Length: 245
Image 1 (cartoon, rainbow, N blue to C red):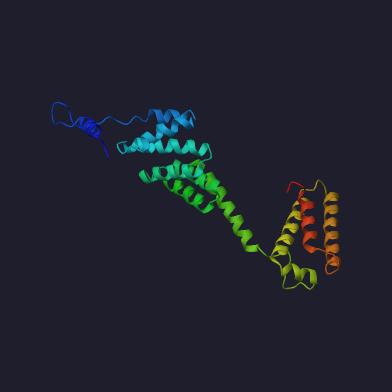
Image 2 (cartoon, rainbow, N blue to C red):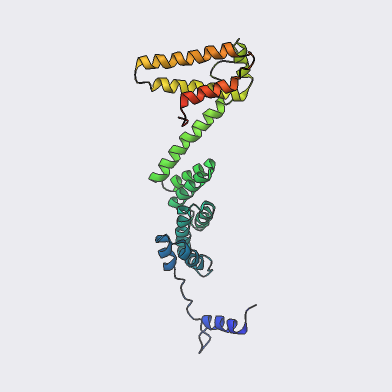
């Protein structure tokens, strides 16, 4: 509850002491907020920007500037959720901010939410079709989503046709999603190392190594102690190297 003194002070702020005419309301100073965010000073920005953003008397244009500035600062310090919240509020106040749609899209991408990222990049391009960053981001994400879609289409499917296979080991691979994915990864990795071979002789040697693995796999499957999954994992690791590439 406000004290009598507080009420009196508030009253004197709005009305002049000598009459009933409303006094001019002091403009909220946004400069300290912008200075703190520009200096990357989280401590000062926390209080300075809050004074602007949480003040209902702040002009709309200044509120948007403060939200954008604080959002960018939070993003630089990996406070992604808070940065998204500031950008979202700024976009509610002005939905024509292509830069902020792109910035929020990049934040969604950091969170791993690719659909929302693509949506924001697209929104930025609708506002400004020539927005270079948004175009690059949207293009990259479109490729990524296409790749994910392709992976989903072949998920659980090996490199060979399960309908025509006769070998017991291949039937086992067809019947196990994890083994099928391993087989497809081995096939793709083998194709890559052969493609990157320094010469034809090296490429032939690499293919012979793959053929030997297939022969050992076919002969070993079903025998006591033979672990098909382990053999496939070791082959994939050999193809990709210790670093996974």
